[in-house]
Length: 492
Image (cartoon, rainbow, N blue to C red):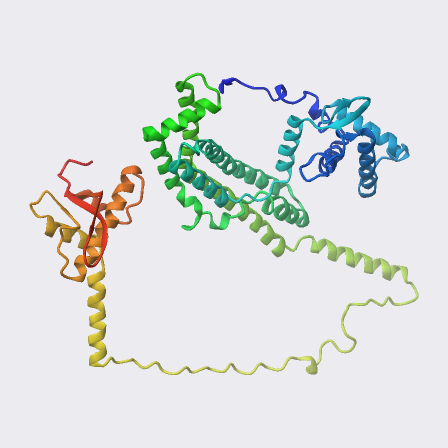
C-alpha cells in the first residue's frame, strides 16, 4: 500500500518507545552500548556463529554477558558495590534491562525461551553502529557509483529502472554528507578553541578531526581528474532520461508497479522527486566552496595554535623562579657546609683560550664555466624555420577557425566538412576540428553551462550541427558536421 510521503512518520511507530532508555540518562550508558555490540557480534551479526536449534538460550547468553562484564571490570573502573555483587547476578540484571527496554526479546518454543533481536531493532543498532564507527568519506567512489548506475538506466531503462531510485538516494546522501561534513568541521573548530593544553589539542586534532571528520580524497577533490568533475555528465544523462518519453514511461511503470501506486500521477510525482535529488548535484559547487572555507579556517586555526605553542616560552619564568627558590632553601638548610649543585657542565674551566672555536675558513668561491652562445648553422636555421612552419600549419586557433569558415562559406547558406576540398595539411586539421566543434555544440545544446574551451566567439558567429550521416575520404572518416552563419539578432 502506498504511503503518503508528505505525512510525518514517527520513529516509535517502528521501534519500541523504551529502547533508548538503556543508552540515555544512565550511569552505565557506555557499558550498555559496549554490551550490545558484544552480543551483536556474538549472536546476531551475519558473521556470528549460527545456533544449532531454534535460537540462543538464556543460559548461553548469560555466559556471554558474564564474560563481557569480567573483561569490563579489568579494563575500566567499577564501583565497589558492583564488584561485591556476584557476577551472575549482575549478568542477569544487565540482560533483564535489555529485555525490558526491548533491545532483546524472548521467543518461546515449547518450554524453552530463546533470546532474539527483532529485525527492526537490529537495523536500528546497525545504523547507530555505522554512525559511531564512521571514518573518512570518499566522494570519488560515490560519484563513480552514481554515474555507473545512471549509465545502466540510460542504456536499458526497462531492466534497470530500479537502479534509478538507488542512484537518486545516493545523490541525496552525497549532498547531505557534504553539508554535514562542513557543519562537523565547524563544530570541531569550536572545540579546538576550548583546549588549553597542547597534548589535548593534538589528540583532538589528529584523532577526532583528521581521522574521522576529514574527507578521505579531499586533496584530489578540486582537481580536474576527480570523478566529481563528471557531475554535469550525470545531470545530462538524467535530463535525457526525463525528456525521452519512452525511457520516462519505463521508469513510471516500474514505480507504479513496485511501489503499488494507484495511478500514473502518483508515479510521476515520486519520479520527479527522485529526478530533483539527482539534479541537486548542480549545487555541489556552492557546497564545495563553503566546505573548503570551513576546512581552511579549521586548518589555519590549528596550525596557528601549534606554531604559537612551539614559539611561546610558556611559564619558563615561573619555573626559573621555582629553581632559584629551591636553591636558596637548600643553602639555608645546610648551615655548616657549602651546597654542591650539579649544573650539567663538564668539570674544568668554562672560559679559556683553548675553549674558543677556531675561526672558520673563508668560503670557497665557485667560479662556474662561462656559457657560450650557440650559433646555428645555416642548415639548422632552415630546419628550425621549417619546423615552425609545420607547427603553424597544424595549429588550429579561434582566429584561424573564424577566417577559414568565413573564407569557405562566403555567400552560401551552409557548408559541411565533407564538402571542403583537402589540398593541404591545414584543410585536414580544420576538417578534424569541425567534428570536435560539432560534438561541443551538441553538448552545449543539452547543457548550456558546458564549457566551450575558449571558442565562444566561434559559436556566436556560426552554428555547428552534428548529423547522423558519415563521410570518408583518403585521409579520414567521421560524422558529417554542417556549419551555418548565425544571422545578427538571431541569438541573444
